[in-house]
Image 1 (cartoon, rainbow, N blue to C red):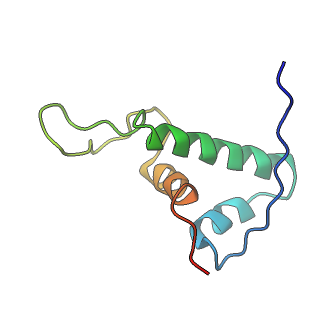
Image 2: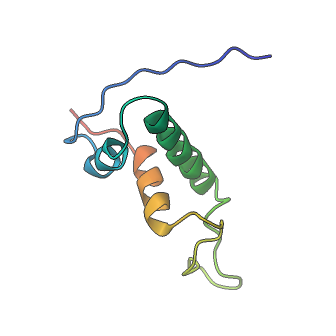
Length: 88
């Protein structure tokens, strides 16, 4: 069995307003951690192409979510989480 990974970070609204607002909806603790875990997993799927296929025969993205229950807003928020870091 692999050892669990412990991650601690600070997130200011100025860093990523959309992610901050999404996580601020939940009281600190397990619910917030679970929401971040879900967003991170959705972002990973999207980044790897599993959640964003192109329409067959074109280079266009589909107009509907390809994973049931994953909205375009969630996908976009997850992609922001995995975007390039803000330059200091």
